[in-house]
Image 1: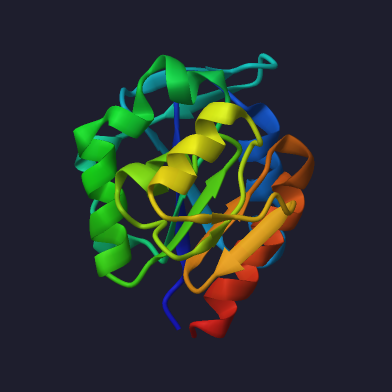
Image 2: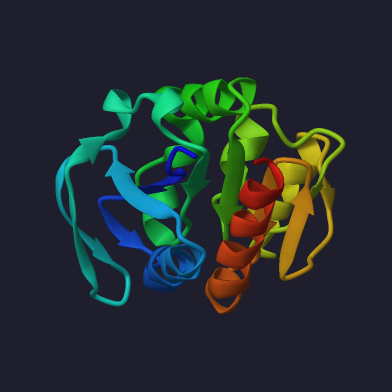
Length: 177
């Protein structure tokens, strides 16, 4: 069996540390390989100060290299306009069309709304007015659960659910084998 790789998309700064590192930890425990991309290469710094070196730009991503793509939330997601970023929206759409599992945590499910991937799906996310509004306008069924899985779309509501979110992504990938 070919190794299953999971790609995390983070903001260059102010991504939510736990949403990256705890989700990666859960997937590592299940034997998956995690890689990180952002809209720019270099040192990325989370909202809580953890750092990670990003060697892959989101516009260089080859969807065929991955089994899943995960969009990480935090203030940087909004600060860098990820839900309005045409390249990231297209990446989400291409990933879904290619059969990948798509994960989004905290405010990142907004990308699912922007990419028209949320319609008639059970979706959760950070329960702020903007996230709920975007998801509902896109036709999503907002559940407010900690972690929600609807087919290949897996969402979570924030940092405290990151580890369970990672486990659910891993479960989805194993079931797809």
